[in-house]
Image (cartoon, rainbow, N blue to C red):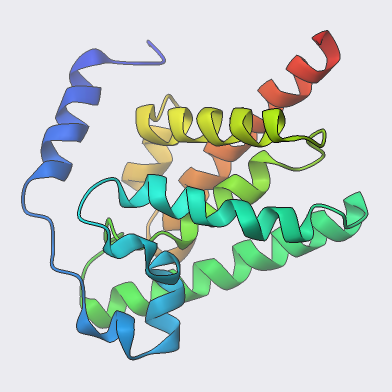
Length: 176
C-alpha cells in the first residue's frame, strides 16, 4: 500500500472544491461556532485550514513557555474540548467535518509543536510539515479521516498529522 496515492490526492482536492457547504451565520453570533470555525479563520473563501493553522501560531507562542508536561496536559484538554465542540456544531449544522471548522488545525499544530525547539525556524518548519501531512493525508491519516466518525474523528486525523510532523521535527532537531 502506497503512503500517497496520486489519484486519491486529486480526488480529495476535487471533492473539496465543489459542493462546499455555506458558512453558518452563527459563526459571528455564537461563541461556540466562532471557536469551532477557528476564531473566524474558517470563513476564509480559500484554504481555511491553512489560515486556521496560521492563527494557531500566536496561541502556540503563548503556551510555548509552559513546562513540557503542562503543555502536553493543555494539548490533551484542547483535543478533548475540540472533539466535543466539533461534534456539537456539526450535529447542529448537519454537516460532518465542515471545511470551515478549523479548530482541528489548532489541535494538530499544537501536537506538532510538542517539545519543539524554540525559534521562528522551528515554528515555520512545524507549520509547513503539519500542513503537508494534513493536506496529503498519508496512511493512516486518510483512513481516520474517512472512517472515524463524530467530533473525535474530526480532530483525530489532524492530531495524527501533528504526530507525524512532531516526529520529523524531533528527528531534524537531533540531526541539526
